[in-house]
Image (cartoon, rainbow, N blue to C red; front, side, top):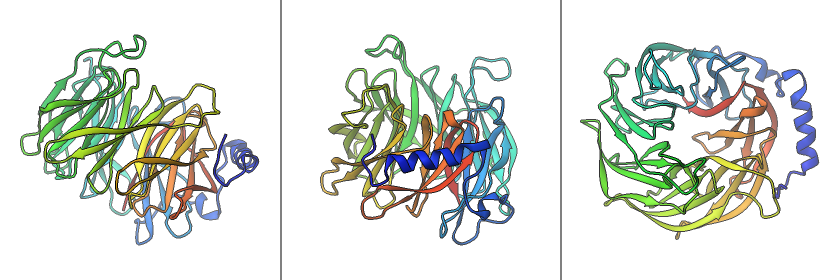
Length: 396
């Protein structure tokens, strides 16, 4: 099933060792709790989860960039279903969606603001605001640090909320409601906004809508916190694809969207002056010989722009693509088992040395070292027990 250099027998052995009694499979350092400032060579790792019987909110670990070791995670901030989190550019605040259908008796999800303790990484609740839509599932902070942008999956809408000087969130300054339906009557009976992205200029916002097979494009006003439809208003994806998440290449010329329902990745050329995406390629995220059910989730690009990574839920892997630097076209470089079930979210640290994958259905967070030449992922043998991990974010 997996075509990288690690034998599947070795992967199974690692998985068996790491699964016993919910243990943390790492060196002695990984059993320590985060208790010091993330200094040189270390990063805080925030893990968003689905809350329930075991998980209570956002968990925090610390990554040693030299050794690749993770500390034992602890609850940094308690909140309901923080399935996606985003960190302010000043590193003083963290914002999380609360993926729910009701907030204070109203039919809407919510978003929570936290302050970050600069010494310990602990989170302190600041305030909450309604997301102006149900089941908010994705959030970003704009590059100026003035607003958060949220995708509301259930209602198929996107909202913008202002960030106040003290880090609190104000009521939504704008909400755009999508309309229509897609080719699949079960999954695409209506709009389902699944992610929000901003281009390098901070002028165009892209909202991937799984229900419409479109990536909606808006003019974003960072002063007013408003979204206005672009012309053309969207990039059209193949019927039944279900676009989910999107990532811009560091050069700003290419973009990549991962499609949940078709398990494909679409490569685009991006006209940054006009905010227009032009499809140049669609490529599968899993090998031809795999015959089971699988659905994609996250997509990220290595900081050097050489590799694109996507997660497969069902095939339970990370697909690795090499990027042609001239055309932006993708070529499969390999697949890596995530050593768990249903890898929903993952994160690549800012140095490009490590990829940390969250296996939602096996309650594990697994760390891999990235080969800088091939892009392939090498298991470090470390696995943390975190219930229902969904999102991985890094901070200094």
